[in-house]
Image (cartoon, rainbow, N blue to C red; front, side, top):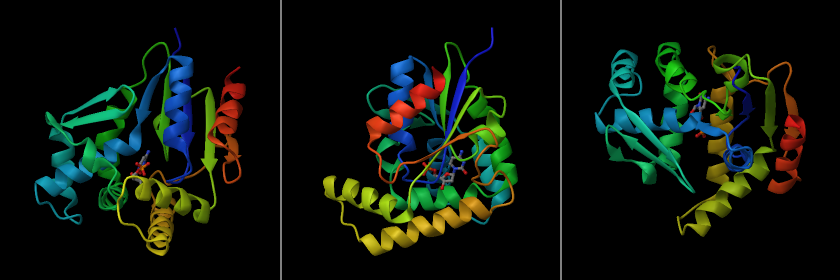
Length: 218
Ligand code: DC
């Protein structure tokens, strides 16, 4: 029996995480937050004091790491048995994740870990290359984006709500730098799949985006 897959790709801060999680709940499908796999590896190499430039050792760390995901109300991730959830969302984690994600050998090791999430009754997969590389066969594909200013403003609000010190100009330039790295890398760059539905969430609410995505499936 074919397993239905919905891929939601796009730049950071476009609302992919929230939309994917809520849509997966509505459909009763599994959920893959592929960014959290790259982020977990970023945390693993920091713990092992491996340099971001040391690709061979990063590949070894990626091959050896075990990840456990608990996708309840909030995503809980364990790296080699240790709960690393609180470190996943840090800007520094995202930045290192984006740098090591540019190595083809690293992406190769992480490919199967992501494909293993494809199980009945279905999967919602969120990332940069879900519809182009990891699940090119997916029946439903969405490319979700928003302007860099809107994405920075959302990120700023999230940090302030968590009482984390934040500077809007720094967040905007970090988002722009990460976009550039993710779009310009040679292997599996952030790109829209040919048959994807394009949604710009700049002026949409989460509910409006979810409605468009659910309409695609129905
Ligand atoms: O979606 P995110 O912000 O959690 O992702 C963090 C970084 O991981 C992102 O900047 C690039 C990398 N990534 C990737 O290369 N491919 C994916 N499918 C998901 C994330």
